[in-house]
Each structure stands twice: as C-alpha cells, then as structure tokens.
Amino acid sequence: MTATIWPALAALLVSAAGVLGLLLAEKQWAVIAIVIAAGVAMLVATRLGWDDRIRRSGGAHACTVSGVALALVVATAFVLREHNFALLMLCTVLLTIVAGLGLTIQFGHAGVVNFAGAAFFGIGAYAAAVLATKTALPHPLVILAGGVCAALIGSVLVLPLLRTRGHYAALITIAFGILFKTFLEVNDTLGGPQGLKVPGFALLGHAFNDPIAIDDETEWSFYLAYAGLSLVIAAAAYVLVRRLERSWIGLAFDAVRLDETAAAAFGVNVAAWKIAAFSIGNFLIGLAGAAYAMMTGFVAPTSFTFGDSLILVSIVILGGLGNALGLVPAALIVVLLPEKLQAIQEYRFLLFALLVIVILLVRPGGLLPRPMRDYSAGEIR
Amino acid sequence: MTASLLDARGLVVRFGGVTALDGLDLSVNTGETVGLIGPNGSGKTTFFNALTGFVRIAGGRAQLAGADITGLEPRRIAARGIARTFQRLRLLLDLSVFDNLMLGQHLTLDHGLWSSVFARGRFAAAVRGQAEVARTLLAAFSPGLPARLFEPARALTMIDRRRVEICRALIRDPALLLLDEPSAGMTPDETAELMTDLLAVKARRPALTVVIIEHDMAVIERVSDRCVVLDYGRKLAEGSYAEVAADPVVRRAYLGED
Picture: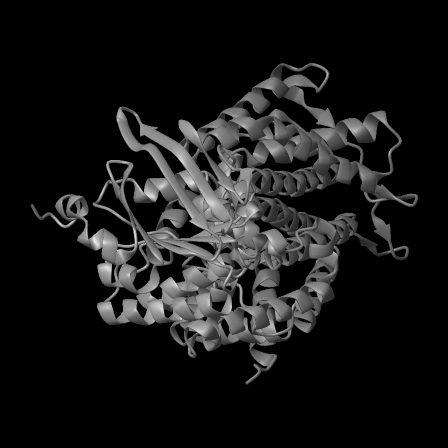
C-alpha cells in the first residue's frame, strides 16, 4: 500500500506557519506560545504515531514534497521581504543547516568526530574574505573555494585522526580549533583580533548588498537576495548529502562507523573512507562559512570559538545523529530561540547543554531519529 | 594430485609473552572442507585472524593459490578471495539485511562520487539487481528470509543472523570461506539445520573451500572432509574425523581422557 501525500504536506504547512510566526513574533509571550505549541505538536504527533505516517508519506512522494518544501521557504522569504532581521535569521538558519550537513556526513555517517566545526566554518569565511578582496575570482567560485580551502586544511588533521580513536580523536580536533583561533588572533595579514572586512556577494553585475528597489516607495531588503543564495546552497548540499547517504558510498560510511573490523574483513578501506567523509564534510562547512562571511560583511576570530563548534555538534545531535532532515528543526531551535527570547540569550550555552542532555535521555535518536535505509519503499532518487 | 589453495607454513603469532600460534603448518586443498578443533585458547581463532590480516604474523608465511598473503592488510586479503564469519557475530545490526549483504559485495560496487550523486537511475538498477542476487542466496538458506530483506538485522533470530552472516561471506563467491564457530549460541537443532544449508551450498559450489572452527563434534563429523586438531598453537593431529577421534593423544588433550 502506498502512502498518500497529505500527511507530509500537512506537516510541512504547519511547520512553515510556525517558523514564519516565530520569525515575525515580536512579543515574548508570542514566541513562548509558538515554542510550546511546537513542542506539544511534536509530542502529540509521536504519541499518535503520526510521525511514522508523515515519514512514509514523505518518502513515497519525495520529489513533490521536496518541491513544496522549497516553495514554502521561498514564500516565507517573500513574506519577510521588508524585514531585515528576520531575513538575516532565515539565512543564518539555512547556512547553519549547510554546516550541520557537513558534520552529519562526518559524525553521523562515517563516525569521524569533529569538534572544530567552527574552525572549518572560519577557514571558509577567511578564505572568502581574502579571495574576494585580493582576487577577481567570480563570487560563486569564491564560495566554492572557501569549501575547498576548509577541506584542504582539514587534511592536515587526517593523519593524527586516523591514528587515534574516540576521545583522543575528539581532543585532536578540539586542539585544532583552539590553535586556529589563536593563529587568527596573532596573524596580522588576516587582520589579527580585529578581523577582516568581506566584500558583499555579487552575481552577474548585481551586488547583493544593494536593496532591491521595486518602485519609488517600496524597497525590499537586500537580505532577500542572500536568502536566495543561502537556499540554493542549502538545497544543493541537502540533495548531495541525502544522495550520498542512499548510495554505496553511504553504506561504506555506515560500515566504517558501525564496525571497522567487519568493514575491513570485506575489503573496505577504512582510512580512505574516513578521509573522504572528513573532507566532504569540511567542504560543506567551509562553503557555509564563506557564504555567511560574504553576507555579514565581516569576519573576526571571536566568531569561531570552541563554543561555536559545540553548538554545531549539539545541532547535529539534537536533530537526530545522521538524519539530514533533523537539522532543520534543530537549527531553528538553536539559531532562532536565543535571538527571539532575550531572556535566554545570556544562558544559551547552558540551555543548549540542558536540551541536548534531555534529548539524549528521553529521545536518544534526536528530534527526528535517522530511519534505516530502506530501498523497498518508494523510488530511489 | 589436487592443488592446495591455502598453504600456511610455520605460522607464528605472539601476544606479548604468549605464543598463540607456534609454527603452525596447515594446507587446504581446493574444494575441501577442513574442520579445525582444539581446546579453548589453542589458537584456532588466532589462525583465522592471522590469515585475514587482523593480527601480525611474527614468523612463517601464508599463501593463497600460490600467492603470498603474509602481512597484507585485511582489505587486501579480502580482495584476494578470503571471506570469513566471526565467532561473535559482526552484523551491522542497525542496518537492513540487504545492507549487510551489500557489505559483502563492497569490492564489486560502484563508489564513484559523480555516479553516486548524479547517476541515480543506474544506482536504482544496481539495487534491484543486487536485491535479486541477495534474495536468491538467502532463499537457499531459509525460504522465509528473502521477504525480510529490508528489515533491520537486529530483528532477526540468532539462527537467521548466522545465516545472514554466512550469506554475507558467500555473496561475492569467495575462494576460501572461514567459519568461526557457526554453532555458537544456537540449539543443536538449529545447528543441524544450518549445517544442512551449508552442505547444500557446498554441493552447488564444489570449488568452494571451507575451514570451519567448531566445538560441536557432531558438526565436525558431518561436514568436514578432514580434521585438524590444534593445541598450544601447534598441530596435534590431522586426519579423517574417525582417525582423529580415535587418536589417544587427541583424546587426552581435547576430550580430557587419560
């Protein structure tokens, strides 16, 4: 029996309405009400088994549902066309998802820990700053180069990472993240502690930092253009990660994560697959960093701390380790809530830590646990 | 004279001060099923681990079909055509039965980045083809298994997990199959059933060479053409089951009689 499309569509519409409400809400009580409503909706859906129906319906109509999801993001951005701050938030969420996708391949699929996510985000950002200032490279290539730089510099860590496991590998990445930040602070060519200015993104002569003038009275926020850019990057990264997951490459990643001995016994080159996952992941994180830097126009070492790396890891765990879709609610919570609820801004690290602990205790698979790869349901796309 | 497929000469493996394999000589002919028996700690599993590259060989050499495999990495040995099972199952329990079998096919699958992301039609066709191969193989072991191809391996009973693990080792048609105590954790009836399946596979693939570690003497008697007894990392005796079982040295060391 094939599932109908309606459960997935309904879930998408309700979620989109909630996100739009959250982005537009200004009163604290409204924000709190939306958060509570979302939590209750999630609990009720799980209790009644709707989550399973939604997943099956989404899986059976993957193409249509993805198209609708994309259209809903575009619609959300359009509704927010005159709200600078809300659009900036939307872009930040989208680019955070891209970085989370990188971490998902590394940590969630191949089991390679990376507690230096913010450093690789920073490498992308600084690469974009330098390349856009010093070279005439077209800006889409600058963003790609940000990803490539992150992947290349990440390969410095490959040898120590392959020789260690578990806690020790985690420590190596932590050390790298801290070294990276210190390096930026003392490096005068890269602006030292003050950081660097980053030129805005430009495509075919259109500068994304210019407001979009519709007529004499109406002007749309320039963040609308960045929302489009972020959405293109996020959609491409999402499709890439989902397709890799559902391919023989994804199976090799899983085998390396779940049992290195069994994998090696059947010919899997464990080291090579770890390197592949680490590099693809860092590429995506660097990509997100480059786009984020061009959008905000400024990079500085203080944006790439160990705390920021931990936030990235907590997004991946919160959403459901290995499940790309889970990054969406997780990034929304982690990026939007502190901005929207001033009361918790000071305590955000504490609250995220608590949230991750609670999730690990009551729902160890995360908000949206990763489903088993199942080729019997639906088409393979 | 039949050619020997596996030829191990003077294999030595040491763990710190303990000598787990002490100059073991063992050769196995193509198509033969050799039963490997011996008390706990006599070096049976270490022999498998040495052959498949999971422990370092300190002395001696191993050849597969005339080519040296001593000291190669596990993945390279797998590529030469040795497949194995593990005493404590090493299925990927969170993945489907299909994915577990596909791990056995790893060396034949297309892992190109470009084709994985963009040639989805080709991938879908590969999945359909492999699912057919997997169903046929599983059906030879148990008629109920093919229908469970897309269930998590965790949902299977012990005997079905054993079957899937053996299928995973068989799917790429290895030259040499190493079975490490397939009866562990199963009832005698289940073991007998599994051995019937194994003999059926052997009947269809006469060139398949098997070395089987087993504590259950009834299994050894039933499936093996030849029996090798290990004790303290050395070969204690060798011959048909009847010969070995009658050997007074073996009875003393292994069956605890004096």
